[in-house]
Length: 165
Image (cartoon, rainbow, N blue to C red; front, side, top):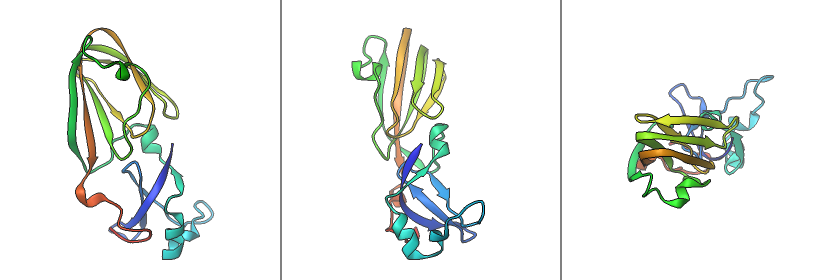
């Protein structure tokens, strides 16, 4: 899945890490011939990459980024009170992650990652929902579920084109 680079920081070893719009972080090293990213070696080069896209494998695998905090919870909903919008394809807002929690019963779940995720979720199961990724659920009988919405920590906002966090 392609995500936008929103800034850069350095890790404890001094390697450059891209901060992505999905709230993941990804090392961007220049190690030819395997990784040709000479642009990471200069502030101007890094600044030129802000707002460009890069692949994010953790989003395709629906892996929650580190450092998220709960912002709010929708629900719980049962099979009668579940809003129609949640029964058809929809997305979580950008820079926000969701966690679908099935409390009781079961649902079918699909998400347009690469490759697509298709699961049967039963009571006690949960599914991370990356920002902006279409997903849908189908109710398979009596169910009780909720969705937790998570955002980055207050200090996780981008600090500028080539700057360090």
